[in-house]
Image (tube, rainbow, N blue to C red; front, top):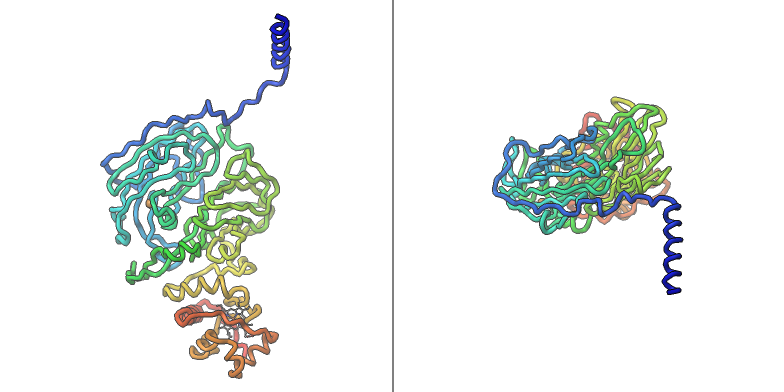
Length: 479
Ligand SMILES: [Cu+2]
């Protein structure tokens, strides 16, 4: 009796405390308020015709439209096989969502429903484009969804259509991609995009501009069958480099230095919000903007994961961030992957207050922002040069540790260059011109680069291309 009485009084005391204490904070991620019961996916043999991407919430480029207010986003993204240009003259046989790489970005809000459908149209030729990759199975995996992968993300055959719906439970900038094995190959071939999910109540800050920046890698090699597209060599996936995680191109929004030629516009004093997504598939991104500081960083695009005053944000494969910064004064602010080997492969772009920024501004980063050769060997050499030789050589920007390479084919014969690249140490012993050059370079001998004969041929093709360019700034011979 006594003990029961004691229990009752304790209970009453607890009740009083909880009634008078602070009201419990509602968890905005309360699972009881989430939609965790999506309906089963539907698979049919009816194909979509007409456009490959349909939906008011879709964004086709870096410039983002404001949120479409409708609570149900109807989205159609069909898969295609098509040729895209990843760098000037590099026509790559890609697989796509919505007939572009990256695929269109979906913009929505927590609580919205995505009503998705996709026809595998990899067996259709897009207008004016030759078929270069055989039709195959594809699928769609939305990182923004909470659904059974076995049901929603299954692979569909050419001509089939899959439909499913899901509700957006968390805010963020989420990747979507094809999940059909070999997933690595499907992603590296171009099958990815972003879903931007705003918090239910919107973002806590106001900005003047919003842009989407998607980083990804390409692993391209000249087609072993030697096929051409409009007279230019076709490039296909290099699966050896892919498995070794050695990309040939690392780019923003699908194209090498794309936003250098077409900078993102801004004005002094403006606050800019970038939605940054790193696709990978295999590299991290150290995303940085030269000339400003990220006032706010929301890791994975969720304002609950906030950091202040960051210089760089590190993004693993499929990680993202919303970064906000103030543009202090007139100028071109350089977006780069601060892993500079990646930046030198094309992961570079500009946020500029200038309609036509001067490409010379990129000089201190040693990025040659302009053209690329079309000869596959020369392209391979250019890419290799930018990662292996840039530390000591520039092209048209003067002497570094070694001579400026511009004009080298005019001051040396091909035979001399081949012997030099094969064995600089031997040349320094036997060749008077090489010895004179060594003296001019503080007696610092160039280390043997261990190049194969093929690679040497490719460097020569690249050097000749440099010197054949009308615009090439060829300095006077050093000798
Ligand atoms: Cu696929």
